[in-house]
Amino acid sequence: MQLTIHQQSVLPAQDTSVASVISYAIHNHSSVPLIAELEISPNGIDFAKDSTLTIEPKTMKVAVPLRFLRWMRLTLSTAEGESGTADVYYQAQSLGSQEEEQ
Image (cartoon, rainbow, N blue to C red; front, side, top):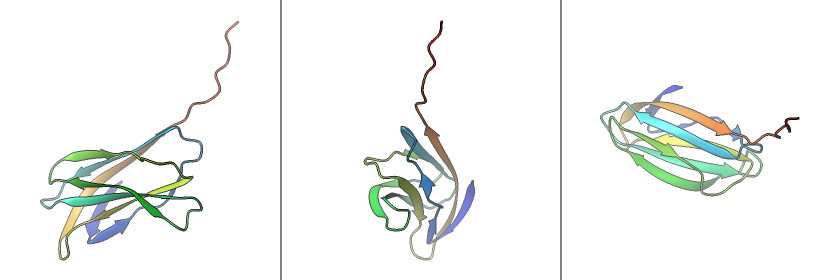
């Protein structure tokens, strides 16, 4: 998903209840730094900050949660009066049940 950020953009919350590995890759296409805040929530309404990254211009970083709650979202922001563009990739992996070979 490509975003244009004007001071702050909040991405939709993701239900991460069945995921065992979760990450957001953020590629900053801007000439200004972006601040990425990973937020977690038990109910999809009330969010707490989990981690914060600074993504320098023309670079990519990966945000991985430090703690687990059912819901997660990413907030991207720029300095006041600045705007930027970024590609954001959400990826999750679940460990499913394995069938036994006979």
